[in-house]
Image 1 (cartoon, rainbow, N blue to C red):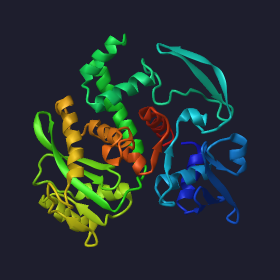
Image 2 (image 1 turned 180 degrees about the horizontal axis):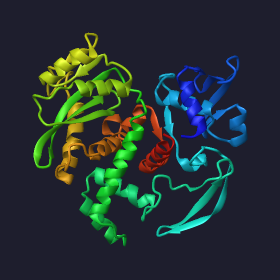
Image 3 (image 1 turned 60 degrees about the vertical axis):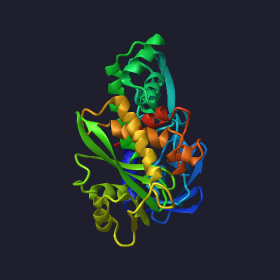
Image 4 (image 1 turned 90 degrees about the vertical axis):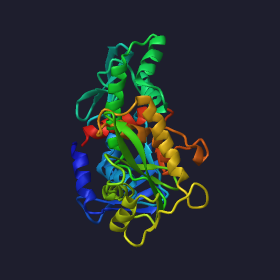
Length: 370
């Protein structure tokens, strides 16, 4: 973890930031309590009026504090969190400095990569964040991810690439899916979605190592954002407490209404976790005002993908998290007008046409800075 991020984490403990306009934040100085700095949101990201940012063109500690506030939704409720394309930022991979210079190129099977050197930390790096030391470039890898979660099997993807003159085994594709599903989901799960006050829950059967299991899920009614997916061995003996606790932790709020089917586990968990102020509707129907059709649509997506990968090998696989990542951030939802993803409805904007690439690059850099 670089020094600026360490200082930013210390500042986060003190509540030193306040929002006074839609795109402006005031951050208290760490060394002088009487002094503040204004951080503004622009199309090119956050900018600060402090000397560190003006000199290094970097993400200073004040910007990092504000970024955390927006990520955790501790700001105006209609503020969008933006996952930016790293190509637009041009910052050092290690210290976030903007004082970088070109320093030659590096060749691989996909072509040439530009090498940069940071004038501040003196380290060298390339900008293929998250795809370093890979035999294939990010377009081929992210294309495989999109094809898999859109309904193609790993063998079909391997055959499709073979027709294009690209030789990659089906196990190679599978390893990409497992690795990048875990990397991407760990990053996006740190971002608090802007959701409504109604939460839905349901369960879908799914095979694990040849045995029937159930995937319990919660979803925001307003944005269709798939919040939590939890695997269970049984349906009627499963306790849903952990599912609802995880839902509160992700949304940072307790719902006003909770819509489910008549499974007893939901009723007991709702009383225990959400409390009496949350209305629990367990008497849902196929038709009418109070139904769970929105949740059944998500279950349909899950079952369609389950047919493709023909069950899971392990209950703790990251493929379920990858499916949730794809559903929220890449799939445009018909119930939202057909051209909006659940993440966009929940005010999480991902730059660029290749959402997988943007998320993976930011996830990789976030891991470096942990």
